[in-house]
Amino acid sequence: MLHRNYIGGEWVESTTTNRNINPSNLDDVVGEYASADAAQTEAAIASAHAAFPAWAASSPETRADALDRIGTELLARKDEIGRLLSREEGKTLPEGVGEVVRAGRVFKFFAGEALRLTGDRLASVRAGVDVEIVREPEGVVGLITPWNFPIAIPAWKIAPALAYGNTVVFKPADLVPGSAWALSEIISRAGLPDGVFNLVMGPGSQVGNAIVRSPLVRAVSFTGSVPVGRRLAGDLVARGAKIQLEMGGKNPLVVLDDADLKVAVECAVNGAFFSTGQRCTASSRLIVQEGIHDRFVEALRERVAGLKVDDALKAGTDIGPVVSRSQLEQDLGYVDIGRNEGAKLVTGGEILNRETPGYYMAPALLTETTNSMRVNREEIFGPVATVIRVRDYEEAVTVANDTEFGLSSGICTTSLKYASDFKKRSAAGMVMVNLPTAGVDYHTPFGGRKGSSYGPREQGAYAREFYTAVKVAYTLG
Image (tube, rainbow, N blue to C red; front, top):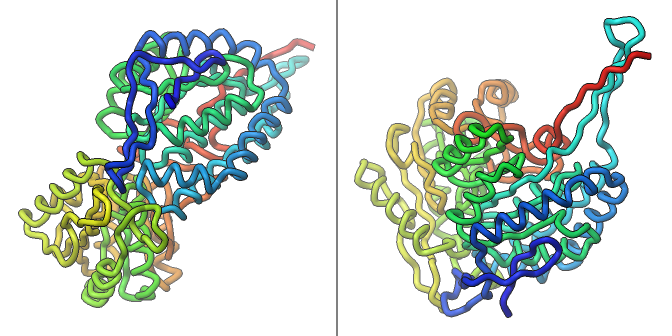
C-alpha cells in the first residue's frame, strides 16, 4: 500500500516515494510513503489559504468536537499506533504507546482550549470609548516536525493550530512518516472542512522550503536542528512571518553531595539514556560534586552496563536502536572525540549485534571530562552522557549555565536551600528537582532559552501566544 499525501481533502499520489525502514530490523519495511515536491506543497498551501476564512469563523464548539474525536480515536488505538511508532523510530514499545497516549491527551486538552479562549474589555482613558481586546487566528500555519517524537510533537503543534482557527500544512520528518500518516488519517475523518488540514510528506529541500517561502503562510512552527532553525528564522523574519523554533539542548543534571544516590542514578539513567538518548531534553551533562562523584559514577556505570539494548518491540528491552545509520555513526564519532580529548570511557560506546540487523549501540558513559570539551559543548543526540566533576554548588551552577543552550536542567539534592536557589538561577526554560530532565506534562508550557528556543512557548494555554494574533478595537459609545 502506498501511503499518499493529504491535500485539499483528498489523498494525492506523488511521482516519488520514500521507504520507511525499521531500525530494529533493517529487513523490515514499515511502508511506502509518497514524497511531495514543491508544486504539491504549494497546492496544499493554496488549499489551506482558501479554507481559512470559513474555519476561522467556525464556532469554538465545532473545533472542540473535531479535536475531541481525534483524541478519542488516538487513545482507543494507542497499542496499534504505539507499535507502529516503535517500529519506525526505535523507542521501546512502552515508550511508543505512552507517546500516543500523550498525543491523544494533547488533542483533548486543546478541545477544551478552543472553548476557553478569552479576551478583555477595558475602560478607555477617553470618556465614552470602549476598548475590546480579542485574539484571532493567524491564518495558514506551516508545521515542520522532527523524527524523535513522531506523533507527540505533531500533536502539540496541530491541535492548538486547529483549536484557535488556523489552517494547517504539516510536514513530518522524512525518517518517520508512518506515525504522522496514521495521525493524519485520523484527522481526515474528524469532520474538518476540506483544506483545513493538509499533510505533505517529503524532503525539506522541496516541502520545507516551499512552506517557509510562501507568502500565504503566516506562521511556521519548527522543531529540529540549530542550523536549519536559524536559517528558517532568517527567511521568515525577512518576509514578516511569525516563527517558533525548538532546536535542542545540552542539558545539565547537577548531583550534589547530599543527594539520594539511588534517586540521582535513576534520574541520570532515565534522562540520559531512555529513548536511546534521542531527546532534546536529555541529560547529556552530569555535573557531580566531588564528595559523591566516585560513588555516583560506579553506581551509574553498573546501572548503565545492565541496561538491555534490543529490538524496540521485545518485552524487557530498556533501550532500542539508534534511529538511523547516520545517527549511529555520529554517536560513535562523539565517543571517539571524547576519548581523544582526554575523557575516560567507563562503559559502552560500541556497536552491538542482535538477533536482527539494526542500529544497536551500547549506551556510553564518559568520565573525567571538562565543560570545554566538544562532547560537552555540542548536542550529540544519542545514548552518550558525560560526567563533569565540580568542587561545590557554586561551581556546579556556573558549569550548568555555561552553554549556548538553555532548554532543561535538573538538580538532585535533599537540600531545600539548594533546590530553591537552583530553580532561580538555572538559565533554562524548564527546571527539574530530583526528576529526570526529560519528561514534561502536556498541559504546561514547553521551551527554553538562548540557543534552544525562539519565539513563544509550545503546549498548554501558552500556545495561544503563537497561534493567535491580538486585536484591539475601540468604539465610541
